[in-house]
Length: 322
Image 1: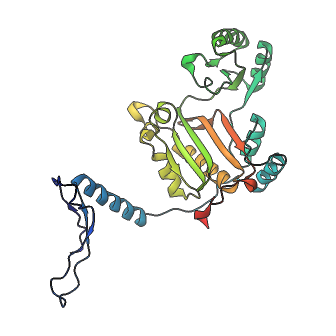
Image 2 (image 1 turned 90 degrees about the vertical axis):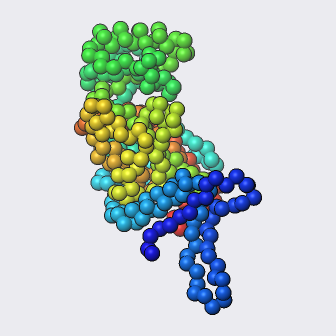
Image 3 (image 1 turned 120 degrees about the horizontal axis):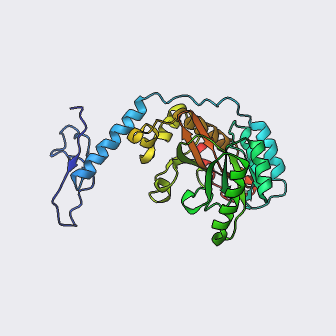
């Protein structure tokens, strides 16, 4: 008594015999006591064990401390709302508008989200001047979305220490990228090396805001190893969110590598969650890559797109929160 019980019927080959579902005992005589509660039944032991495991996980989730819904310090929704009102003044229907780097940085800054600065250029001398403003050493990148993170394809050159080296790298990179249509280039402040991660936030037609996290590269591109959550998120939700992808073990000292500053990733996740939950007009935010090191996390590139949420046609948006 008091113990969970499931039944598994293995070896049944006759498809007409259906054993999946809740099965209860019927009393043999009208005056017999009521039968025991029905027993969940499965056609194989694996499904039965999986069902028990799901019950255990749910019970553990109910018993744990769910955390608090605390907004990170430095979040300012009203200035962000004012900026979005101006930006969307001439946007109609379901039109998406991609923000330029400076506008995106300003909008994200209202929630304490900082981008690593970068400057585009046309000539090598402009690149040297930009590097002088940013501070040496710098990284040289193409702005092509498909190449800007591809060191193997010549789209990135790191740790350039001086003007002569930068001029030489600009010439060499442009020559190597001619086969891709000679995309434009930029210089960016160097940041400490770390584990490349990616965050994404979208406005789903039914659920409203959806936040996603994964480890950049093959984990998300080939294996679709994402974690997804629907805001609002408590502190415990954010904690689990960062640890949910299967590849997240690489954040904790995998194969002798130093553990990254997971608290910085959690802080970024909390800020992005609040930003997206407060502003449905922000249709898409994509940070890729976010370099997480032992002492922080740096956003190297951001794609931010906005739309006029008041004119959208997805009438069920956020219905689950009503």
